[in-house]
Length: 121
Image (cartoon, rainbow, N blue to C red; front, side, top):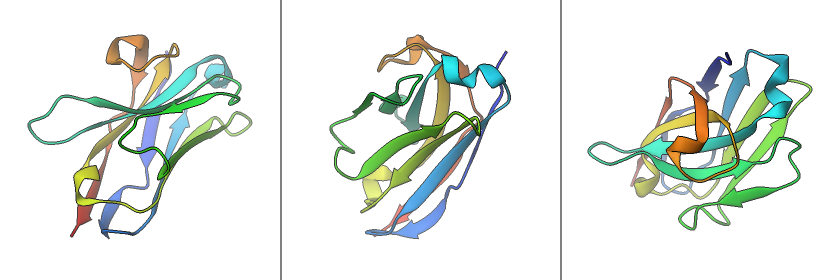
């Protein structure tokens, strides 16, 4: 079992930056691929970014490419999402997840509770 706790969300203006963090409870953190997903009201949960267990490989959704950066610190059991040039359409609850490399919800076994990001225009 891996427990994940997100933090760092908030209310910002368009063009601002935020950094989300996801703290994992287990030392086995480094054995999991880690992903960020988001879910806006009335919409399905969508893929944002994924990082390999070692951190050597990442993949971003087209909608965030060039603006968001996923990273991890395996020594600190922590996952990050640096979000720059935020847009109102980035408004959503952001979730971190642990599992296998992939872009679909089904690739991940463990989920955090989510953190709200709201971007005003």
